[in-house]
Length: 381
Image (cartoon, rainbow, N blue to C red):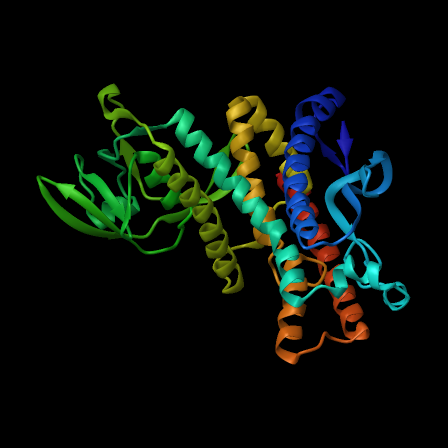
């Protein structure tokens, strides 16, 4: 089957392998995000007119006893909560409706709440995504533990960055840039996401600790989920079964793991964006809905339910983090407006906010077109 000139396999692959996992993961993440807005809005006494998963024409829905319309719409790439006083799904104030509201209606209007309450309602969406990711990562750590391969070097690849740094067979990697390493997979994850960065390795050798400095070489690797640009060091792990152990976590330790994993995703994202701005990284690694759909299907196929749950946590962190960008239309843009309002003592004019939302819409459309083009190019590569 060909879409936009790209062969994506049979109709069966598209409808059964890729689409269902993608829609499931996306729907869960969007629901949690919007539920964060919804719950804090209700706690602040704001009336909720619509809770929507998706945009466009309604596929199915119902109205609850408090007058909120719950619905699922045709285009599943997002969602929204429309509060009392909102003109549209971007939470633009409806000035005409606000002007003719009664005192009772004003008490339930989003735009008549304090700056602090509005900021809390807006921030609750990303916060819900982060809490969801922490809960998932913590749950996986608590119930499954963590199987690790001892981070001991069996061999050093000739001509590699590791050889240049002075690694030797038998070295046990204890930490990277002061961050403790539990297993070889931790080492791989940090190295692969640090292409071109200078890293300090704390190594145990012959009972003593040695510090080695190495810079992973940027290279492209083919994985079951497509081509990725990663950093390579040039170390081979021991393949001895005795080097494998399982770490078990209690409730508190598992929660700590959940926080750490969520922090790690945010940290790596910030690192990538920093490199992107300074020209040290390429924008062709940015992915859009097509790529996410492909990865969702592949993860479900290769890694099963646990893999799909982990992907849900990763996507939840990403969506929560992206929504904090100070771009009008996104939660971060609203928070930026509220910060200006708090400093000025009054909100920006309707005209200024309207211009901001138009700029935000243009930026989001350009970004969507760009990442979709990236997806198509990567699929044809």
